Image (tube, rainbow, N blue to C red; front, side, top):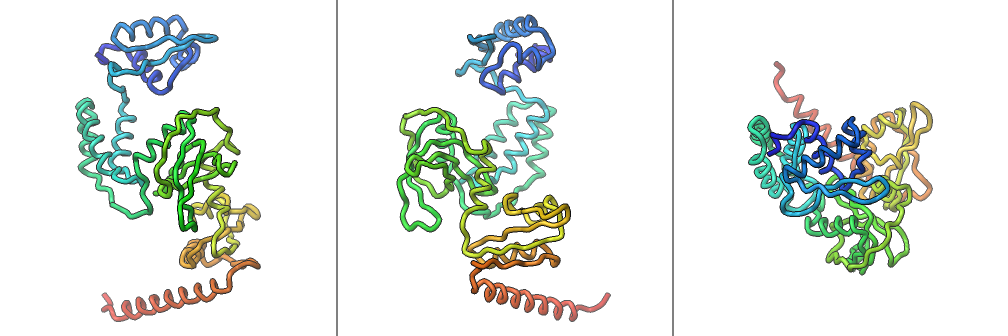
Length: 335
């Protein structure tokens, strides 16, 4: 059926699939046509069986009705390839995501036109993701429950085990957003128990249960869930802390260290102060190495004395390893 639709109507249908509702004015602006043309094209879509509903309001609007009769999702070439790449390389810290993504990719291939099917098949055959134990895994059912609660502004209860807490505690929250950071997933929510905004590691919460109580959406401080999570992580207390100055601009420093933006403080256009924080001295050592030999370390007054001894021990290990490599290289025959 879709091959009988002109390009403009395919674009119209694609727009209707990207948002819950569009006004007639918005659709006309996106398509570069008049409102009358939009209404005529909407009528033709309905004749082809696409369930486009009219909505009431100031200027009226349109949306695709939900239901089992909805025709297949339309994808352009770039969108289809992008989805295939995402599915083939899905390793985002979700339990079992790799197998599920491969099943979805196989289904996608079945409905693609021949020209795209060959490209996606070549991509699947040539791409081999490397399994990597990048950290704790989130349960997909838990993510689905929390995502629905974020969408519906529904209060959720769960048990949560904090970083240093021996036992989980009961929480009652208003979910706002899910944030993926590497292999870890975080829930940003207003904690009704603490009467404050909080971030929760999804792998540390169990038994998320919707309560059926829907509330008005709260405004997140700053309005940026990812930025809020990053700031929370940066401000979290750590056993060991140091500050270092590097002769680099902020962008270069962040690219070299992969540090959170909140831990990089520009001094001028060519120097930055970097906050180093970790519970494990090894992580402090790794961060120092990424800063390069030009870094100047500034221990704080609250720096733990044992950090120096532990860093010294690590440096001795590196020195021994360097000596072993030097000796091994020295024994190799010259070419």
